[in-house]
Image (cartoon, rainbow, N blue to C red; front, side, top):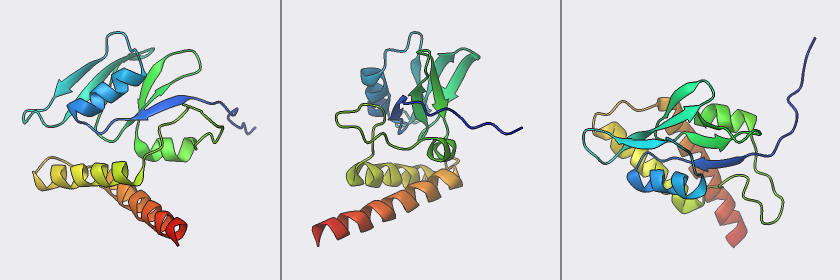
Length: 144
């Protein structure tokens, strides 16, 4: 038997791995017990998020979602992109859509992280590059 996931609107925010990015997550969501854990160089870090399955770690470029029962989870960008799409309802806060500038900044941070010798998630890097290129192309079409 096959099953289809029910369409559900969720709230989500992108975590870029910086302390400012952590504040952005905490500004959007009040997650009891969640905390930012800085890396050794203090420029990036992770989030520890209590979930129904225990504490989960959100790494740079993960999405943080609020589930249908009010629970919070980190989700890898490739899984997020395969599972969710923007809810285009006016004034919706269901997903924080990354602007061209935000994509460029996330791409720059991923590049900096890779060049500094930090282990980089190649799939995330390629995803950001693809999204940035598509957003740039769309922006150029809209300006013509």
